Length: 69
Image 1: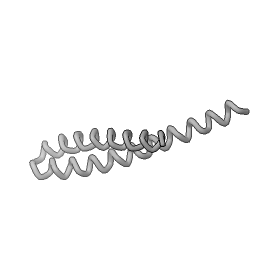
Image 2: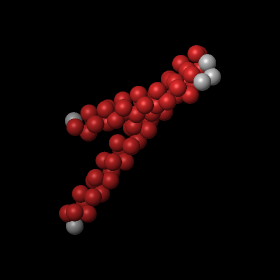
Image 3: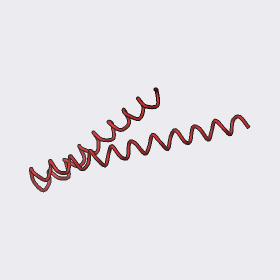
């Protein structure tokens, strides 16, 4: 359960950061582009957040296995 919550929080955090960056970059070009940039940035951020938590969990599993040996 804890890993599901961590994954959701990480995904939300990266999605928010990605949306802000995408909207800022898109805002340099125009109002409609800011909206599209925010949406795409949020999508990319959510994907990055999902992947980073998965990698952290795998590293912790490997470290746990090495400690047992």
